[in-house]
Length: 130
Image (cartoon, rainbow, N blue to C red):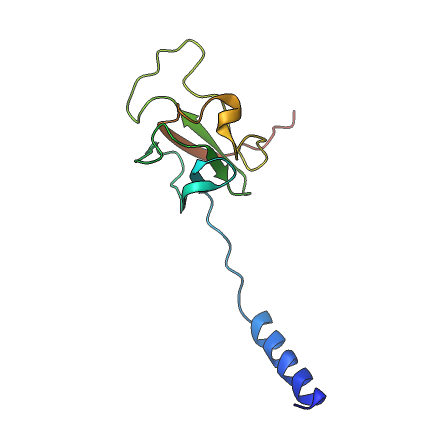
């Protein structure tokens, strides 16, 4: 094949790709895995915000990877099932998990891999300027 044909083919492919619109990911994407570091049984879904999501088997009380996508949202892992009433004085979550959370690929590091039953997610609130 001639060099000019190869270049023309590459340029045509680049033009075709650049004309394709880029799809933006939906907010709420979350990777769940039974093992640390995205091992074991895994699932990835985009979850509705401001809704409690019950973890099904095999993830109920068995989630080591809890990794949200990089958009501006947080998820809150919960000890209780959806609809349960939290009676703990310290709360029933260890707090917000986002893309930057250091233990998102190993909840066992904080001993939550056998506790998580459900979760909910919400958009991050922008900092207020006073």
